Each structure stands twice: as structure tokens, then as C-alpha cells.
Length: 338
Image 1 (spheres, rainbow, N blue to C red):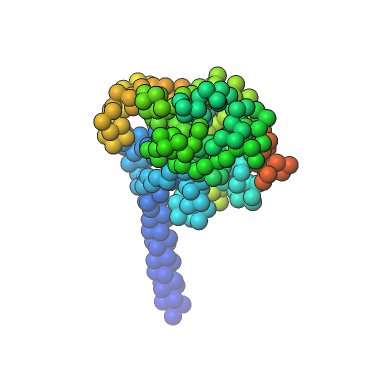
Image 2 (spheres, rainbow, N blue to C red):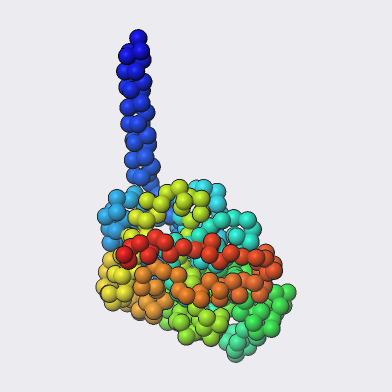
């Protein structure tokens, strides 16, 4: 009888081990959903480019790229557990920690925001700097978005209080351009390729340029790490193998961007990203390439700049103790380099 029981236990143990192995394999192969705060924005190019280059598949990953027009909406999807990762601005990790949410950037794509404060040409005579936005309406992608954060800081730095101007959420791309055309906003913050489109039509002009390290340092006082892949810390801790594969795929993409021209990169993108104006898209992409990191690492001093900016105006961050070391990790990208 004992031998029989032992045999049955052995069979049961083997079955349980097989089930556990199958569950682990299924978890590793499970679809990962990544929400992008506006997939067609060039600042978030690495998300779709990685898919186009086949790097997710090379890592054995099944990744679904989804898009929301504003980063704050993508952030909410992550907190609700609807997606596993967000390609959005790093500053959300600091803002969320101040609210008791643990989120960290695992790959950093942009060492600068890639954002530009554009002023409508009809208002350019009145608005020559951010000090002139009193009584004006400023467009952002969404309330609580990174464009909103940066707009508030630039106004604050210029001595303009939030009560002295109006912020209007107008989205990005076509909806942003429509807001300029319809005179619903006097100025607003947007990214490429919208910047180049507005410059080409002459409907808007550059007021503050944060597409380069020089422009960003002048506007914000240092490098401002921006577009990144961020995830809930608890999920990262429980899925290190999948996160490592994601990091490897994205670092390959950053190296591809570094080694290729705007024209060569554009050839890899879906046609709907540039529509009927491929030449304009290539030009916008060329203007944006300096913003990207070479290796996905967090730039030194970057988190401190972001914290300084948010602490100046964000009531949820101001005066709070923020552990910057818990808002990002280089663990996974460093492993790729080894």
C-alpha cells in the first residue's frame, strides 16, 4: 500500500510540475500590451520601430502596441492593470510616487522632451516669450500630461502664475493643429511631426525649443529624460525575464537609430505615419534624432532636473520626499551591454 501511495504521489508531483512548467511557459509567452501616449509622435518612435524591425519577435515576445493621445491616459491604463507597460514621459514616475504609486522607467528613449512651445503666428506679435502668456490660452495634450507639467514650469519660471493663463487640453497631431487654426489656443506644446507641419504652413512659430540638449538646458536647467518605457515596480519584480527581453529589444532599436539616417529609419515605418508627406516626415525625424539616447540608459543628473521642475509647481510633489532611485532602473539595459 505504501509503495502504491508513493507511486501515486510521484505521479501527482510530476503532474503538478508539468502544470507549473506549462504555466511558466504560458506566462513567458503571454501577450504584453504596451500603451503609447500617441504612437505617431516621433518622440515615441522606438515603440513602433522596434515592432517594425522584428526585435520583439526575435526575443520571443508577443507585444501589442496600443495608442492613447495623451500620456496621462496611458498612465491610467497602466495603474488599472489593463496594460503591462507605457511608453510615455519619465516625469510620471515621480508624480505617481508622490501619490503612493510605485512605477519605474526601465528603458529611457529620450534625454530631452522633444517638445516645442509653438505660438500661433497671429499671436506672435504679442507673445515673444513665456512671460507674455498672461491672459492667453495655452494648449496641452491633456490635463495632468507632461506637456501640462512643462507648460506650467515654463510659465512659472517666467513669473506667470497658473491663475494668469488658461490651459486647454487639445490632444496632439491634427487636433492640435485644428486648435491653432480655429484660434482656440494662442500657443501650445507639441512634438514632431506636428511642429514641422505648422512651420511649413506658417500657422505657428517656435517659442521654446526643447528638441536639443542645448535648448532643453536653457529652458529647464539640465537634461530632462522624457520618453521611456515605464512599468509598475511590482510587475517588473515578478516578470524580470520578460522585462529583460523587452529591454534587449529596445536597446537594439536605440542602436539602430544611432547607426541610421532619418531617411533609412523612415523606410521602416508604416506609411500611415507620414501619409502623403514623406519628405516632411523625414525632415521632422532628422530634427528629432539628437534627442534619443544611444543605449536606453538614464542620463546622469536627469532625474534631479525632472524633480526640480515638478517640485516648483506640482502641489503633489512639492515638499514631498521622493526616492529617485525607485523611479528608474538601469539594471536591464546594463545587462544588455554586458
